[in-house]
Image (cartoon, rainbow, N blue to C red; front, top):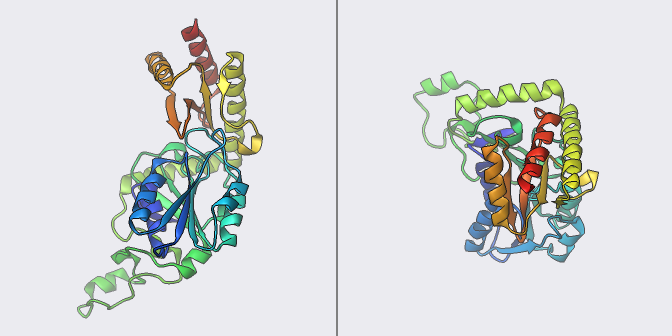
Length: 320
């Protein structure tokens, strides 16, 4: 694991910029993915890279759809492990299998998974990026990623800094009057640390993330996921009792801590419900992308069934 700056964005950009795209190559993204990947698509197009888009099927994606767009000029697949709008958990292992058959690199945004779900299949990706906020229970200000052995061996960091240098004794290095440009190599060639941010990492977010990680490890990621799934089932049952339209995939293998649902006919109605819930001390969000929209409720292991009941009761009262 390496730390790459202040957010998932900095980690994803480090990964994308390390991939040697050439004019005429292509990259694959998902149409409902987070706007971070839309921004990366814009940057890639400016470099002469074709961006191919996989369309969702009611907020979900099947790995087989990749065969329609991946070919010998595909250099990268950019995807999230959990879709931020619908909460669909994607089979990263199968997606990576298709991409790797074409020798493409796989860059995964795992911020909607890290800290809440077991890392199933993520070890098949070449880069797994995350931020420490959200499910890792930390403040904003720190991003990181895990890097595959293949990426370490084949790729170079796009912007190494001084702290990437393979220096064993920094005290001696600072005192050495002979140091000059090209005195040492710019990065540790055989280590994922060459992708780490080469400057200053903010201390307070780092310490907060370390404490939150200790808490999650104390519970165990298996225990965290089990609690998230229990609360998710309770949430779905409560929504079904209200005759809400639950849009998140029903399969257990595709479930996450995010549940998307509708009670009205428009996103404006959803926004109004969200505002009225907030006035009652119940916080959810309204989200939409690529034609899919609704209200998004998220449950994590610090939540209790009483929280789910409070949401259900508040929604019932607002409908009445």
